[in-house]
View 1 (cartoon, helix red, strand yellow):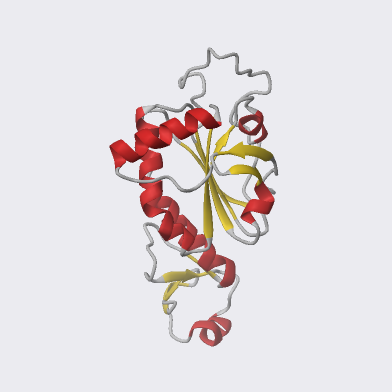
View 2 (cartoon, one colour):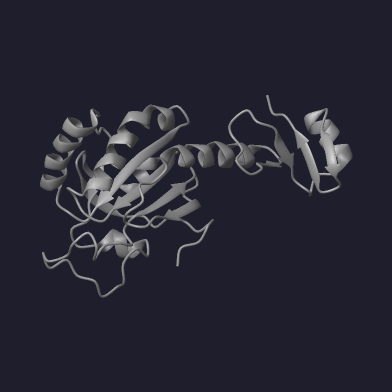
Amino acid sequence: MLRINDIAPNFEANTTEGKINFHQYLDDSWGVLFSHPKDFTPVCTTELGYMAKIEGEFLSRKCKLVGLSVDSVEDHIKWKKDIEETQNAIVKYPLIADEDLTIAKLYNMLPAEAINDGKRTALTNATVRSIFLIDPDKKIRMTLTYPMTTGRNFDEILRVLDSVQLSSVKKVATPANWKKNDDVIIVPAVSDEEAKELFGKFKKIKPYLRYTKID
């Protein structure tokens, strides 16, 4: 199983934007790889449309989007037209064509013995509804897998991205329901003296619970 801080497996794949090498495509950016069990499915249609609408939010955080489905590039292109028509959004990020299920297996979304014999349905591929947040060092920083009937909350992925990017450069963590510009928690490994040097003022609730604001 892939775990947080594991290196995201590299791969080459055909996409709606041409052939890519995943690590080379990400380069020094963050990345979100989000997968779908089948083209022309209702929940996923709304998801790809919403991600297209907020892609600029990810790009402003130096984070690239990459979608994946187990159908062909040709089907992806047809699906993109449906998405534009029904969701009023143009999908510009690449959609990977994982027809032989190689990447779904590589990322532990499907068992090794799974084959794409043309009879697979979205239900068969139910576990191919995963999200991987990947940092510039190609480490996995977050994973999520949703059930078939629940559309994913991509605003939450933005929130996590903000949190992880902040905690990667500052000695802080973020509390429950934290949003960008809210107060953060000083990590326990930082002493009060060091906290004063790093952050100036901070609020001490308990020795292990100290809040501060990051400008």
